[in-house]
Image 1 (cartoon, rainbow, N blue to C red):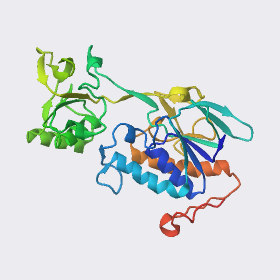
Image 2: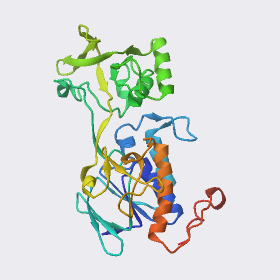
Image 3: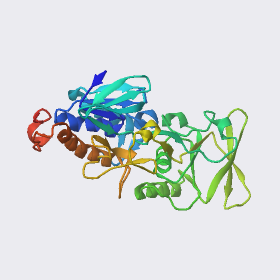
Length: 337
C-alpha cells in the first residue's frame, strides 16, 4: 500500500512538472504510468523530435526536456509505479481515494491529478487495405530515431504539426523527403508551414498536395506507394519508408468509468483550478477539455501550477497558503504545512 499527498496519473511532461510545483508546497507525489519509463509520449514515441514552444528554449529535443524535468523534480523525491495502468477508483472514508493498478498496486491519496495526456492511444492509419503487411517493413506511424532514415527515400503523409515538423527534420537527414497531403492548406503552426514551403522551393522537400496514398507495393519490404492526385490516374512513388502521421486516436481507458464528466474523450474541468466534477480529482494537460483549450505542453504546465494551489487547500483546508517566488526563496523556502 502506497500513501501520498497527490497521486498523479501520467508521468509525461505535465505530470512531472506538477511534481515540482507540488514540491514547492511540501506536497509529496506518486506517479503511475502504463509506460515503463517517465516521459509519456515524449520518450516512448518521439524522444528525438525537437519542440519549439517551451519558454526559454528555442528548440529542445523531447527526450532532453524529460531529462531536464527529472533533474528539476529530483530534490522532491517523487516515487513511481511504471508499466502499470490506473484502473479502479474507490472513495474511502475521511476524503481519501484508493486507486488500484492493472497489477494490483494500491495507492491512497486525498488528491488525484489525472495527467494522462491522450490517455491510451493508437495511431490513426490510412485506409489502405494491405498496410499491415508493411508495418515495420517500411511503414512507420511514429519516429523514434530519425537516424533510421539517413540516406533513405521517405514519404511523409499528413497535414498537421507532426507531419510538418518531421518533414523539416528529415530534410537534413534523408536522401529524399516528400510530404503528401490531401489538401493544399496545412493545419499546423504557420512558422512550420513557412519552413516546409521554403524547403520545397529549395528542392529539399517534394510537396505533393491534393493527393492521398491508396496502395503499397513491395516484396517483403516497401518499394513504392501508390498515389492518387485529384482523382486522376494513380501513379507509383518509389520510397523506402512511408510515414503516415495522422495523429493518435485517444481512449480514456478505465478512467472513463470513474464517474467523471466526459466530452469527446476528454475530461471536463473548471478552469479556476482544473478540478473535475468529483472533489479532490483534477485533470491537467491534453486529457482535459474546456472552452478555448489548447493542447500544448506549456499550457499543461500552467494548469498543473494552479491545480496544486487548489490541492493544497483541499488537503489542508485550515492552513493559510501564502504565495512566494523561487527567485527569493529558492526551492526550499516554500510551504506552510
